[in-house]
Amino acid sequence: MSRLDSFIRRVSAQRDCLNQVAEDLKGTEGSILEFGLGNGRTYDHLRSLFGAEDIYVFERKVNAHPDCIPDDEHLILGDVLETLPTAKDRIGRSVRLAHCDIGTGDKEASLKLAAQMSVYLDQLLHRGAYVVSDQPQEVEGWEAQPLPENVAPGRYHIYRKA
Ligand code: SAM
Image (cartoon, rainbow, N blue to C red):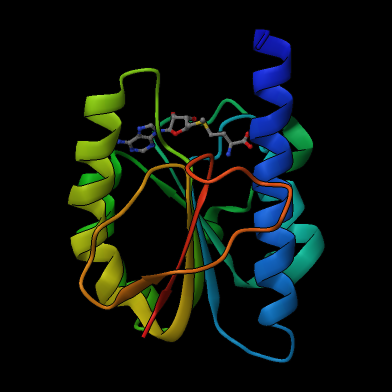
C-alpha cells in the first residue's frame, strides 16, 4: 500500500468513526475532548458535528491551520501528561466523547502514552461516554465497539465506558 493510500485510509477511518459516534450521541450533552490538534483537521470535523462550545483541545504546541485553532478557554496547552491530571477541576466528569490522536511513528511510545493518559481520562468520562482512539486501549470498563463497516479492524478503535 502506498503512503498516500495509507493516509487516506487513516483519515477516512477517523471521519467514519467520529461520524458513527456522533450519530449515537445525538440528543446528549457534555464535553468533547480532542487530544492532538495537529493541523486541526479532526478538530474542525468535531466542530462541524458538535459545535465548538463543548470541545476542549489538548496540545503540546499549536501548529494548526489558523481557522482551526480553538479560543484560549478551550485550548489546554502543554504535555498532556501534565495537563490532563488537573483537567478535572476545569472540565469535571462531564465528557461524552474523547478523541485521542496523539500517536507518532514510534508505536511503543504511542502505546505507552495512550495507557498513561487513559488513567486520567477515565476519571473525566461519564457513563456511556465514547473514546475514539488511534491506539488500542485496555481499560477496565471500556468496552470495544463495532467499527464502521469500511474501517478495517485495528485501523482505529472505538470504546464505550460501561
Ligand atoms: N488530529 C490531528 C489532525 O487531524 O490534524 C492530528 C494530530 S497529530 C497526529 C498529533 C498531535 O499530538 C501533534 O500535534 C503533537 O504535537 C500532539 N502531541 C503528541 N504528544 C503529545 C503530548 N504528550 N502532549 C500534548 N500533545 C501531544
